[in-house]
Amino acid sequence: MISLTKLNGKAFSLNALYIETVEEFPDTTITLTTGRKYVVLESGNEVLNRVTKFYKSVQLLSNPHLRGEEDE
Image (tube, rainbow, N blue to C red; front, side):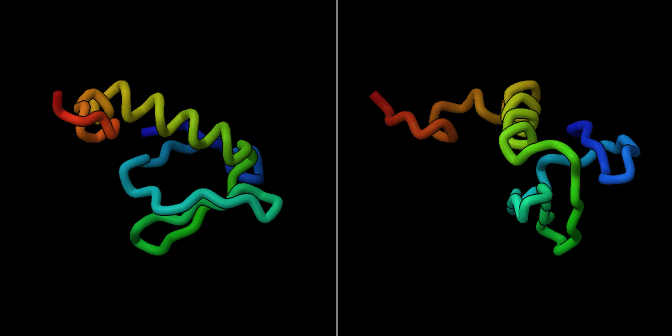
């Protein structure tokens, strides 16, 4: 889960595994795999940083194949 802020200032947690796209329109809009959309105060880069940090914390990026590394 990552912590984000809605436009009204209310904090919420979002399951980063369901994020399909992050776009700036200029507001940052997150679309989930379910089709649901969230508009947040954080920049697109900040959302991506939090998602990456979350993936590392659950060791989703610890697999060399997921990181794009070849077998030696």
